Amino acid sequence: MPNTAPAPAPVDSASVRRHNLALVLRHIAAHGPSSRSRIAAAVGLVPASVTGLVADLAARGLVQEEVGGPGGGRGRPSRPVRLVPERVLAITVQITLEQLRAQVTDLAGTVVTRATTPHRVPHGDPEALARAVAAVVRDAETDARSVPGALLSRVVVAMAGPVTSDASHTVMAATDFGWRAPVDLGALIAAELPALDCPLEVINDANAAALAEYQALAADRTHPPRGLAYLKADTGVGGGLVVDGRIQDGSHGVAIEPGHLPLALDGPPCACGARGCLAVFAGPEPLLTAAGLADTLRTQGKDAALAALDRALHADDPAAHRALRGAGEAVGAAVLGMVTLLDVEEIVLGGYFADWYRWLAPAIDTRLAGRRALAAPWMPRLTPGVLGDTATLRGAAALARESTLNDPSTVPPL
Image (cartoon, rainbow, N blue to C red; front, side, top):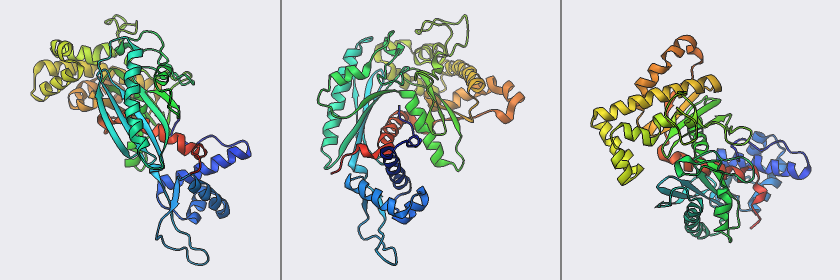
């Protein structure tokens, strides 16, 4: 899975060239229009090298001189060089239990098009889901191909459940979808898209959301946290870990799945095969059931039931408030486990944990009070996420963008 840190140090002349192209493109993407001399000073390369690298990037359509830009004083004028974000587009798709959310984004992260498509894929049928995703990708591809001169660089599909970090990006399990065995979802989708001429990968949706929330904090603060853990609930309960701008997903890509963190050895059975997991206390189905909305869930679906719970909370419904208190106790226990294991500076709550933070917070705080009394200076900050239901697609788009920024040579000359 690509990350948001620069590529590893180069080891040969071709790698050096790619590395230096990435340095220059990253600087322009991050800092806006810049003169060649300013780029050279910022990235530590000699001006002559930067001139050649800018020419290479311009030939690929990734940058261009600003028309009418100021001269550079003596000698040849040095016009600022700016990013051409529309040159590279990516398609990102988020899979939820009831919808497929798709976006086309450019190299600056700007959304070019977006669409939300309801799906009625049978429970436990990954082939049917792959066909539905492929149909959404084809529509988005038509939008992307209509942009003059644009290159479609990557398709990124964000899925609930642990996803391996090897080349197969296998979904190891997706209990909310009824998948109890590993599924190579990427291969299933690719088989439905034989004409697709760019890489397609499947990633964990919570990892993508964690990255997006980290980037939002980094943009808003002078000193962003070095380590951030993310805990969210929507389709199910999941999470992610970001350290120094990079997703940390373990040896096989399936680490940090707090939804299946066991909180009670004799608790209710979980679909994962264990007992007493966070998901059976604070996941959508048990939470809705505790709030008295099981019939709504069964007859109208999860999205409608969660909307009904939101209305009940704002109407001060006692059953809804009791359900949130119980979920808050479970989330507080899970946060304690994450604090002990991960030693991060910040834990961000996403999904409906963020939407309903005001009702969850008292019970969470009660759970954390003892720990704070013993280790207050080392307790992480606990905050609700700021990106809402856009977090996953934003993170997926950032990962797609990084694939180009890490290696601009993948973009062919015009």
